[in-house]
Image 1 (cartoon, rainbow, N blue to C red):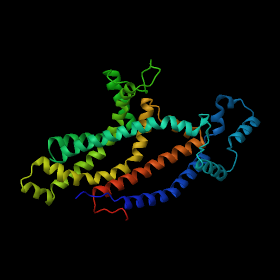
Image 2 (image 1 turned 180 degrees about the vertical axis):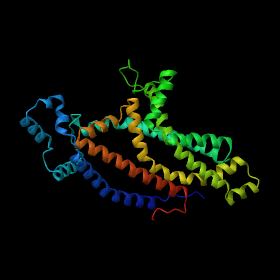
Image 3 (image 1 turned 135 degrees about the vertical axis):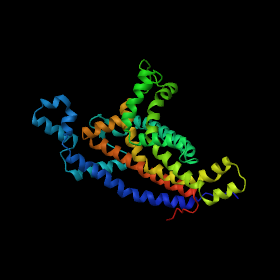
Image 4 (image 1 turned 135 degrees about the horizontal axis):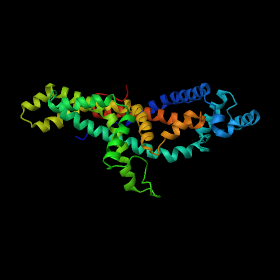
Length: 330
């Protein structure tokens, strides 16, 4: 009999998480304004640039009033929040453009990089984890585990610089950065795919150790369980035992990683984008932080927080679908 998906419980869980996310997002936005308020950076001087060095105090005060940074913290936060609820995220002081426009033209490239890297990490981590878990202590297990523990301690930006040196400078096989070739004026699929390979691989490899170690442990433990031993005793082939029994049971713990790795994925993506000059939200995030750009900084922080919350929800939903013993109403 075909199993019916529990749409009702899934919808209720999603609704509860959405309600719980509201106070979290409110607290995060307020914290952004509070931290920016205590920051030593002056948004007025950042906006004025070199002209602010020779400007009079009267002009600086007028500029401060025009930017709205002379008002109390709570007032600025509430005005931004009420405008954001209507779809108006305000204007970026440092970019001198609407925040929605800044995020809109960059977000897609960041999502493309992050999703591609995540798929690379899951695919390679699962494959290597199965190969190592089926014979723990063997040559493949020892070799891949050693590499995984090394990668676990390696910063993403260091892996990026190493990849540029080897693949771009030494071999000349892949471009060192950017979205398209230097001489090109148009963005084409082939060029984007070619330029995406190196940053996606670096970001994916930086996330791979955790998926590998979880799958390795899960598959290895599943192969020692009684149901798997019984399947072998019934004469089932090793491939059938591995894919039909051990792999499904061993993959369950990995599903919880999807949500927990989202913050690391976002952090790693920002570093990788910076190293490879990828036109995502990394540059905007750095500029917003150093220039105390309240509207842009708040919007980017809310975006990152929402991604983390969605990642946690997704991992719980996948775990509930994979294991019927886990309910959605708990």
